[in-house]
Length: 241
Image (tube, helix red, strand yellow):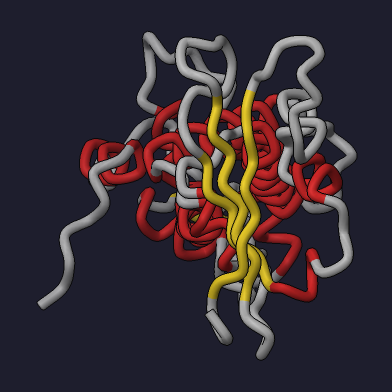
C-alpha cells in the first residue's frame, strides 16, 4: 500500500494544478512542425525531465516555462502551474534536507519554491541551460539556508549531539553544567558526553569553550572572588565505570 503524499505545499500544488490546462499551452519544437506541437501540462513535465529528448527542444521548453512564470497571477493559472512543473526537480532535495537537518518538511518545501521562482525571474535570454540553472540555484539556496540554520539553532538534546562524534574503547567523559538558580542566561542543567580520547589531558575550561559555555563557566573551581554563575563536574562513564 502506498503512503499518502506529504501534506505540504508540494502536495497542495500537485492536487490543485496537476490537472489544469492553462493557456496558451506549452509547445514542443522538435522539428516536426514549424509552429511547434502543443502539449498538455502533464506531457510537458515529462519532457522537461526526459534526457532522451533533444536538448535544444528541452531548452526551448524551459524558456517557455520562464516566460509563463512572468504571467499575471490574477489572470492566469500559469504562475502556479510553473511551480507544478518544477516539483520533480525539487522533491528529492526537499526530502534530503528534511532528513539531514531534521527540518520541517513544509518549511523546506516553501524555501525551495521561493528559490525556484526567484531563479526563474533571474533567467537571462543567453542562458544555455535555463532549466538546470534554475533548479541548481533553488536547491543550492535551500541547502545553504539549512546549513546556516544548523549553526545558529540551539540543540535540545546535547547528549544526543555528542553521540554523533564517535566512540572508542576507552569509554566516555561526561560533564554536567549546573547554573545558579534564578541567574539569567543558561537556566537548565546541561550534560555533555564525549569520547574519552577527546578530553583526556585537556583542561575543563577548554571543554567548556568547545561546547559554547565558556562565557558562563571559565574555570573548574570557585575562588571566592566575584559572583559564581555555575559549577561544572567532570566524571568518567562507560568502560571501567
